[in-house]
Image (cartoon, rainbow, N blue to C red; front, side):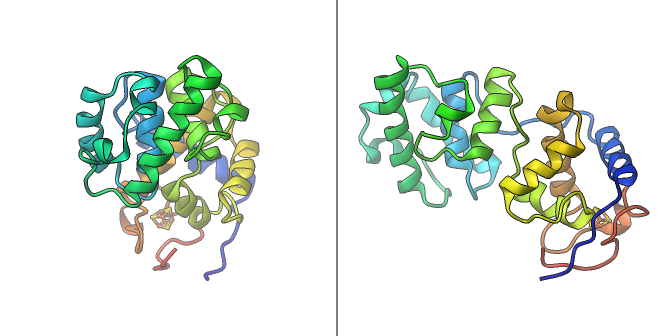
Length: 219
Ligand code: SF4
């Protein structure tokens, strides 16, 4: 495990400002048109590529419109539309169970708060943050996915590899008004330049700030 150095506050703010400028259109990649679709997409997306999820949900959303539709479905019926997704069976079971709870407790509406969302099967804090930001316009925190985790460690925005701890570090660093956007800015950088396993440091706008500039890394 490589040793990661923290950036000082001024350089961390400078790095984030540069990234915001570099990715002005950074936003959620998963397709959705309502909170239920956002929830279904985010459950499928864990450890799977967003583009692959979008292909699956394009079919799923044609057939399932309400929480009741999912709650009454049998897993193989939904699985017919799911291809190239890791742990697809478990994820589809989570979607069905989550929708059964949404039907029973929330009159068919996806809850719009962290406390209730994280009680649903298949939804952790990162997914709940993503649903709140994108489907409800509420930023209670910052979703830390694998890209945000990797870039934040390399860049020295946090030394905590555990996503929930890293989120707390990022929340201290970033103005609350930017919580909804910053994860996407960092994620876009992780996809475009600071990739796994080896980052493209020579092309990086942060290479005169970043403590891991030029250090090939598996993290
Ligand atoms: S300099 Fe390299 S390691 Fe640092 S953020 Fe840029 S691409 Fe990532």
